[in-house]
Image (cartoon, rainbow, N blue to C red; front, side, top):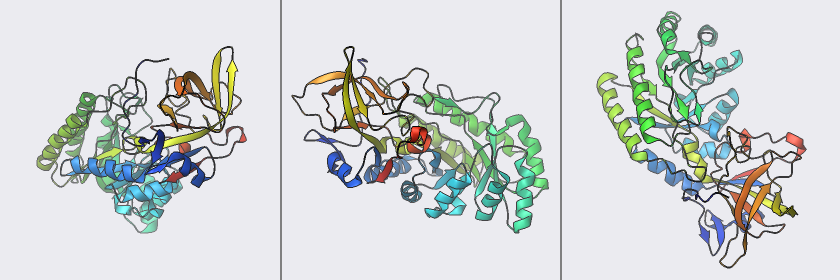
Length: 409
């Protein structure tokens, strides 16, 4: 059992021993939802967290929500009113964003494998398409001609560097994402020749990074690369998306990202943009950083088993609904997400337990040797940091168990 603590949480306080969600005891919310497992996201925390960050960003820097982190329709509708834009990665996400009320002018569409029909949908909707390969250019031109509408485009650039210390690297070396930087000048010529509406560049070097210095370095390198490419565009740059990558602490010993240096670095770039790319908006695209802390996953204990001296709490939730917490979504060595009992009062006996799900596979684990108060069937357990890459990133049809409910409280 790890002796390192998890980072302190900023949402879901414990009052009189019980975790509360948006001012109500978790047991009451569970009764309102009517079944377990479920995800709950705190609307008030989201407003405070996202609004606060947006206020701290320098003038001239826009905040976009990458909805692949959590495409729950009610959440996207809320976020559309809190951020400056929504970034989607499929026609399905595009439809959710439009239904949620996001303005087409403030939606961008990325992804390395856009189907022909998706490109046509994007042109028809009037959203900005981040071009990921040479293949997309003539398809967009054809769609624009057939529809009699302009095709708004930006070029997603695969930079010759990566974001150091990232959980997932999305730039540098050979990548399926974006156009290699050295091929961009020729692509810009083709975009101009076909009459597409070029608006700027999109760079995304990596994600889930807790190192502020590495983020500042990557943002600066992205800006410098875009500046060198802009000179060959022939059209003024209106938008420069320098990506995100801002991480959240999931595991014992991790510390929250120090925002201050990252925001100071953006202020420096915003000042440079005003002088060197006049009229261009600088965009920060964040997903998990905006929503991860706002969500919890709640499961109910079905059985308490003792096997050769180890206690196993078998719950109705597991990897089919929360793949990331099971350790099967990018972890090399499995580590515990912050996991607690819904009720924990002084005097309750505690013990190290293994929290597992109902699936017939040894991969279905939510916690290894977690220190919890003794739990019995019917008790609720809570996995924190679950607002991003939860239900939509999990194989919910695996083994035929019911899908979970998601609520915005």
